[in-house]
Picture 1 (tube, rainbow, N blue to C red):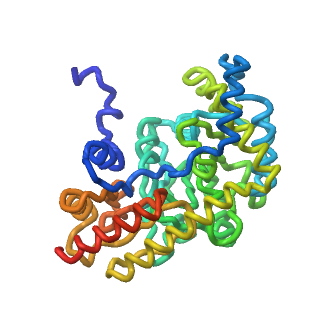
Picture 2 (cartoon, one colour):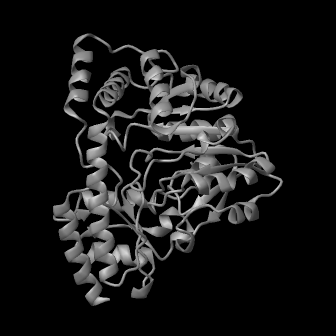
Length: 388
């Protein structure tokens, strides 16, 4: 049956994250630091609104772009929180930020187009480029530069076939953040080579070092940026599957056509829950989001201190909810470290190689779990380190 399988799909490797998650699901007593999903439950008022929506019979399709009320709130939200300005008419409500990434790449890529993917990076970017017909080009970012994309690194990676660059900060898996000044430094390179930016800002609310900066807020960059965000991480709404994407007119129109033919619309009930999340957020100054952010920051500091104290050099995350310690001193690469740790001590971490070759000697640990689990996991990891 292989002849019937699309060659691009056949060439993809299974997700390195899901492999470990699937093992943990069937392993009694295991602690998972693998999957980046908030351990907080969606706020009660948001869940209540979804129940009320069901009782009112809101079970139909919405318009393709999403509920007008939600798009109005999204436009207001990104303007007031991040100084990013797109109209509701240039906003598409998507099935999570994942659909938004796929839409952007399918709308942009022609066969042979190169898309720059700074690494370490979220596992879906390169495969999504490949499935869209483009060529993902890894751009190595290192701890020496705090895992940011510098003008020099960017310039060196560009060729005549480069069409776009993915910018994803706060970063998964490193927790790195680019300041406004650092983003401003890469803008001249982007403009010089007439590139499009695909900016995934799903962790924007989970920035620990001041206000989040978006490349779309700099000068005229909104007109060459596909802006992606959503509700999964900061609002603890992963299972609701609500994201959104905003873009320049021509790219927006292409994405909208693909969305119409493939998805139609995001779930009605989930969209109404998202309206509630934003409405309540504006009413209370997004205090629930802030409470979660503070707790994530506390957990991250705990893990960094623990890893550094036990000889695993660990970058201090400035956003998101991951740490990315180097395991090189153990003599193991990330893959071997993760496999042995899981086998001997039932702690699941993700090999850094899942996020590109740049992460080979690292592992990713999510701290979107309780302090009780983190403390127990560190005790087991320390015992493992004494053995290797």
